[in-house]
Length: 223
Image (cartoon, rainbow, N blue to C red; front, side):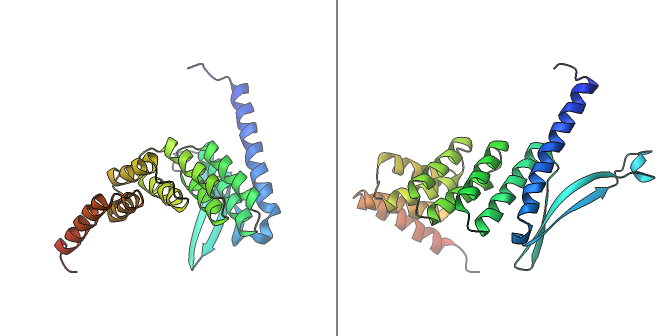
């Protein structure tokens, strides 16, 4: 790995700060729509002898404070790519609350690109598209999530439901339903698999799955 020079480090820091400020400015432009507030926070670390303990504190850190249904939460906007993804997702939520579907989708997709390990943005985009009756696009979003996270049972189940709604009881739909069972989707995944078999005219297979579900339910101890 090449050694970074002080000039290179300074350039990277300045570029990151510029990106962060741009995101903050966009949040501030939508402040009147925000169910919470955006504020700056400074911190003190635990490093012995650090100047933050006697003088200038670390920061500023930009924090998005949200409150919903009596519960509060914070989104920090300072952690490089992960923080960038959360900030973009926050912008997506604000756009969605404001009724701006296209902007919300754009922010969610950018959030997913910024941090492919974060599934929430793709989930929100897919759910939003389905609610807007753009089901083929929703299918594409769930499919994209499965490409990045092939063991996501919920994504597989959501995709199966959308395909069943348009009567696409193909081998691919069946494989997705089986995948959701293998990936521990639980009883709901098994019920969905039974639905697929029934839609394909495979009544015996559907009945067997449902019978096993009933047996499992009866075997569970009463709470």
